Image 1 (cartoon, rainbow over the protein chains, first blue to last red):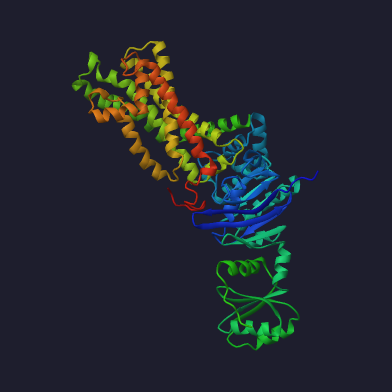
Image 2: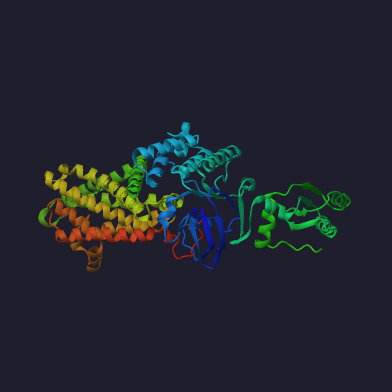
Length: 314
Length: 264
């Protein structure tokens, strides 16, 4: 018998009064997957995570975690979960070790088992030198690592991480992702995470883009990028719109969207005519070609849903 | 088993937090002594009580109740703090569930109330004649009052989202509970309307329970005191479990987004 998916939700939604925070999330995540949830602030990412974590009741739809219903079988769901939210949740008055011991007991571990799990989490998190210091004395990066150690201490099957690296320097971000990679490698832990650092979503098996409570794109990062074009052109300056229109006329533009600074054009076909056209374009202060990134996917998807991009006439 | 580990973990954490906030702990212990020594000494000279009891003897059970009431209810602030900083969300998402979380918090807050009241109880022989048996009875009554106070404090804290709001609201609730309980002066001399309020004030029965324990004349029968104090604890706990339930967490569904830092 095959194991049910780590996450299976259909039409999952929640309102806050008149605000439709999450419209209808359809998502199936197989065990061991890494899934990134992207979207602007207020897109519904945290709501989706709270619904899956059994901390909010859905207004619509249904969700199952490893086959357990998030509303009907909350205790069974919670036994499989490790959670981390945007705010740090280590208690500044306690030492790191005491914080982790508290987490172990909260997860139902007692005595020797709890102490062994704490020692293991400290070792995995590289927290040995800080384990007996009050958490309030730690830097934000080390506090977040203590948070990660807490969330993974009981070896959950599914980690739900809401912006796990927010506000951290690259070194601590790297440390956190190396711990999470190890969890996936050694325990086939499924990870659902949200982030505003789009490069962190590049290694994900799947990316879900939310905007204004709706899923606006969902696929593997490679396929999402390929959908925009083979290459991306950044065009700035007063003549940017005219050049974008000309590229569409040339048949070289698969997608065109406006950003705060100018236009981005997803290109297909040979490069030479594009470069030639751009070279002669007036009032263009910057024209640069580069590989398509997830940030392009983000802008192309979320601006369309949240704040409609101005149409560019062909 | 797992729920009991969670309860134990919550109690251990809350007590550790309390002992590390020494100024708050010492302030809680000093409050009843200030009343006993500063107010009690002054009132001794002017108060004429039924039965000819010196005021300090009369007020002693009330001061213990005061210590338990403040210790038990004010410890609930850690629940509001935990909600404000996201810790409560993690506790409620643990397999133990809301009832275990609430039980752990009630036990921890009760222990703080017992500790603060117990320090006053320890000096009982300096104020009034007390046998070992009476002392043990008073300890039991203190535990009941502390448990009831902890439950009441958590009921107040259950829906609040900012420490500032808790501080403002709890004082408005605490002072009437204390002053209309017969802890500091007899309710018999109050105007009828206030006396009626005192009769529905659960702390009145806790104070009366402590008076019985010290062998002082009580206003109500001992079984009545016990029934009210334990009843309030049980009903309060049941109500608290519902209020702490994460599905009810965002009251009036739609009131706020989960990430909204605005406080209630």
